Length: 419
Image 1 (cartoon, one colour):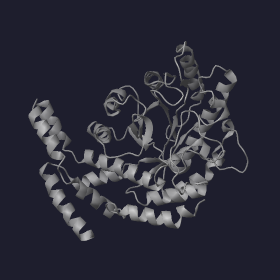
Image 2 (tube, rainbow, N blue to C red):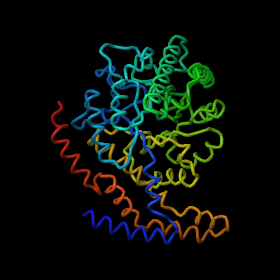
Image 3 (tube, rainbow, N blue to C red):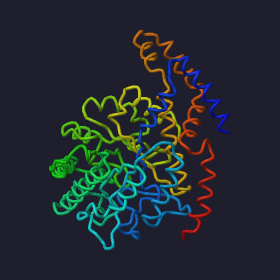
Image 4 (cartoon, helix red, strand yellow):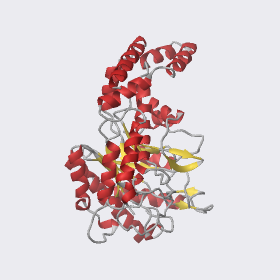
């Protein structure tokens, strides 16, 4: 099989060379990109703070597939399996509720020591770590408000939680030698039409300024803020809208997080990348797949996904964009969800890297839109699959759908034993 894969790659290499694309150099670029997998796919956003507490604050995971991770040890075991099926060296995005502690710890008192085992695991496996405060599934978030709450005491609790989370992000960066991105998303909003839209946003602005008051070394931690159009329980009004966070990130020079499922179904975050990067230093992307609403489906190789990666590559933004995933599907094998979603994100990125960008840009600048259209359509039939298969082979991960055989064997041997 490897002989045929290499032979197919050599033919594809010749085809791309005719367009001026060096596939060897392209694969070297792809190998340098680290996707940040999201820990919450492995246990349906439950975490280990209080496993008996249900989800709230606009979060929902549907399905009950066998083998859900019940402990951090099991979650890391499942992640190890997923990473072994994905080419390249990648990161992990942790939420605060994935702490490990022997006694209940209030969220505003979490410390780096509660994540020491995650750091040890990441160091051993060559993963970087990213972080998120968990501003949902908590008694002080059950009325739908956190950092914008009308009660100053509740706001202070969440301010302290977010401050502690930034310290943990900085700890990850120091210990692992790779910068952590700490991203803040809150569920704040109203189910029905509010009277006062301004006051919660003013309170959110003031709370965020307090969260970010302490300067942290950007070599260790970068701060991001994430918007949303609407959610469960906030259908009519979300405090942290796109306009709010774009203004905040631009004025405070923070990273802006664009989640592919947090906008109107007719919008795509691909079109927002070049505009926002004129005003903010860097972007964080949460690559997801919304279906009718923010339902966080597993990423598939859609036109929208390809458009996102094309925009990153065509704009030469790879060094300013952090790519993370954000979906949680409990109706299918959770390791398969990670594997399929991440491999699709990488395949879309490979497609973008294989474009003869300078040639396409020259056609556009010359006003040759006929040539531009013809080339774009011709690229759709190029043998990128042979290049992808070769990339997987060279990095010792399953080629094609062979990863599914390993996942099914793992399900039989490990996941099915969990009750």
